[in-house]
Amino acid sequence: MLGSNTTEEDWAAHLDAALGNPYVLQRRIRPVTELFPDEDGRLQPWRTVWGVFTMERGFAGVLARGTRLETSTGVVNIANGAHGGTALYELAPTGIGG
View (spheres, rainbow, N blue to C red):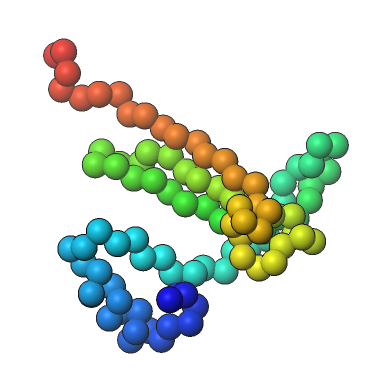
């Protein structure tokens, strides 16, 4: 079920039902236009979405997907031609070796 097609009450019920189970729930957030440089350094409008990864010790990295605004279908995913990339971050180990 798409989050954009649910009421606040339905969304709350889905969250309650998923607690304690191995599900991923996502709410659709409408992306804003961001400017990124093209191959010639000119800023071009892209529709982008960002995801943040966290682990037990905190921040672990980000995921970004984006499409050129003029080719965007409104849904930013690889199947619709979006480009994607990640930036991962590893924290130094704690409590190992003194």
